[in-house]
Amino acid sequence: MSALALNGLTKRYDDGLLALCDFELEIPEGSFFGLLGPNGAGKTTLISAVCNLIRITAGDIRVFGHPHHSIEARRLIGLAEQDVNLDRFLDVEETLVYHGGYYGLSRRTARQRAREMMDVFDLHGKARTRAPKLSGGMRRRLLLARALMHEPRLVILDEPTAGVDFELRMELWRYIRRLHSSGTTILLTTHYLEEAEELCEEIALIRGGELVARDTAEALRDAYDATSLTDVYLKAMAG
Amino acid sequence: MSELITRHRPLFWLTRREVLRVSKLWTQTIAAPVIASFLFILVFGLSLGGRIKRIDGYSYDVFIVPGLITMAMVQAAYSNNASSVFQARFDRYLHDVLAAPMRNWEVNLGLSLGGAVRALAIGVSLFGLSLVVVDVPIAQPGVLVLAVVLALLLFSALGVVVGIYAETFDHHTFVNNIIILPLTFLGGVFYSVSRLPSPWQEISRANPIFYLVSAVRYGFLGTADAPIGLALGVTAVLALAAVGWSSWLFRTGRRLKA
Image (cartoon, each protein chain N blue to C red):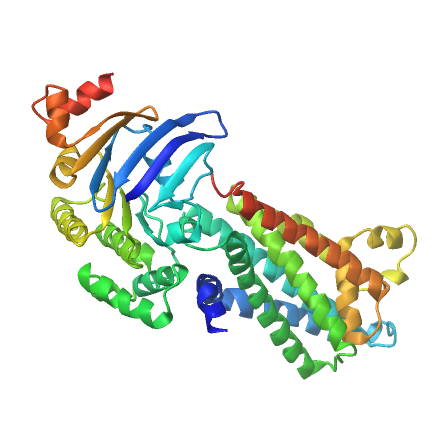
């Protein structure tokens, strides 16, 4: 079964900008899928469409076979956005517990799961700290922990390591790999080509709202007669 | 019953979050408006009240309490929801809610209830405090409950709508300071509209807040400037329009989703 299937997805913003044009994509269940492209390529629009954060112009989105706007589909997705979008009135533990509540967890389950997440992401020491007082790295951890609170089957990570230091990036990679090894499907967007090559089983290159290429890193190198993914990217984006 | 609770658990948590926000900021959200309105009762009611004739059989300090409670409640319901929704949009934390497995009406209701709870806390506190200095009756409890429910529906929904449309924090304070506050003051909070000379009386009757103040005053005192059926009817129509507007925004995603 496909974890995510996009058929003819089109998004034209109110100002006339065509961000995605008749976009087709299928991501198999259990895969680690990377989405690469320059700023404005349509990566965040695609993610926002899947997560019901924008109104799509045309097309169909299915999440494990469910229409993306259905309650069932929403329960199956975990999203860590590129921008830090934490609730300033909640502390770390409350952020996790309330998110669990929004996804239907009982109070007891949400608290237990929040403790587990704080253990995994080393957030226990900041349990009573409100989001605005956290360091950048802690906020990134919290975003990821929040996305995983309700144990989603499809985790969407939009530039999860943007602006974090090398140590934290390695740490986040470890978390993400562990997550994938437990069977979770992961859709990752990143500007770091080495991150995509290191983590993703399959990579899609997207430019101007259209899919340019899609394959494993090795197959993409062969197809573009390139020695590295950077070369592939440069050739693909040059059109 | 337990299935119903499980089904609507996300709504419960969103409502709880909105109430938590109110309680974490209780000095601003509850104490400040209660104290400000109580000062109105003390200053206008007790110091000036002796110089003003009885209105509709009640002393002036008793007459102004229902209007002051109404004013404090509707402003709280409005400004709470407008600022909470605007902040949620501005910080983009709203995405966490919009992506969650919640129905559109649940998101709308959850975001609205924070203002309603805050307004009720203010109304009950102010009423209790006013009893220390004046003897305010509740002549028509059924009418009072209905009038308060309609007022909360109207201003909670209006706050959500303005919070969705606002581009800056100033927009929601503009609506409060330039529209709601003047209309409330001119809606007969401090005086009986029926005592105004023409054309001010007719102009006052074109003010929708006048009917809301009249409905709440009727609930407390059993008497008001407008017929109770008309007062409740006008307030109900306005409440329906505001709720319809906010429901449309959540159903279509306009202004909430690009």
